[in-house]
Amino acid sequence: MTKLSLKKENVKELLFFTLLVFAAIAVSVDKNSQNAVKDGIFLWAAAVLPALFPYLVITSLVSSLKITGKIAAALSPFTEKAWGVNGNCGYALFISLMSGYPVGAKCVSDLKIKGLTGDAESVRAAALCSSSSPVFLIGSVGNLTFNSPLFGLLLFITHIISVFSVGFFFSFYKRKERPVKATPAPRGGSDNVFYESVYQAVISILVVGGIITVFYLFTEILSGLGVINAVAKVFGLISDDPAVCYGLTNGLFECTKGLKILAGGGISLFTLPVAAAICGFGGLSVIMQSVAYLKKAQIKTAPFLLSKTLAAVINFCIGLILSALFL
Image (cartoon, rainbow, N blue to C red):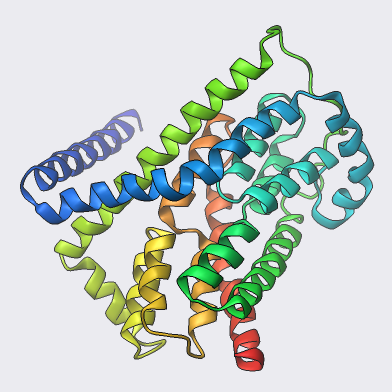
């Protein structure tokens, strides 16, 4: 058994090493790969950094306040019945809905590390507290990318219904394990809460930027190998619109890039459901950002990956209905 485990570990390391060498060569000699790195850094600096960094600081500061525990206790009766989590997770849900990916995962991770959620409860909370923000969905995607406020509003409604639905489904995960009683977070030994909050936010936002850039490069490499084209042909079974096929394919890896390609084809019956599915899934880039926080708190990631797949399916179905009714 030990030899088998060692062999598997060696294979994983060999594959990882090969990918790193291949990526390094691609960046060195391929101009498209170099541009992909620049695009990833530009997206992070222009859109993610100003939108996400303040929320990372604020959530850390707010979590240190005693009033947060009182609010959590008041929310618990509702959140326990609806999603099988305590009021602290209800607070994390609110922050997630306001600030977007991956702040919800960070909040859940912090709660688990502080002992404010149980093992099974953390899995339920991770599935529930994973959402995009209304600023991104209505403002960036609706108004700017698709040039349609109605499209953004329908996308937001679809997303909210999906978030609550996924949370409800995952409330049955190990339901016998009851939520931890909501209490204020224990205060740390440091008196310099502001410095620690800013420091942690800086580290977190740099990690997010690194992951975004790596996935931009990864997508470009896959495109050069013909993988993107092959997957897009499979999605051709859903629609014969190239914008839908290539938008969905790229959106599986990086959400904003997929949405940009999708918008290039205009708005049709499948545009809203595909955009909703991309935003619900978040793309592997966003998922890896969330997983980085969840692993830090030793929260199981397999159920989380399942929840993002379920979110994509629910978003697509609801989006299809709303598209037929209103677009």
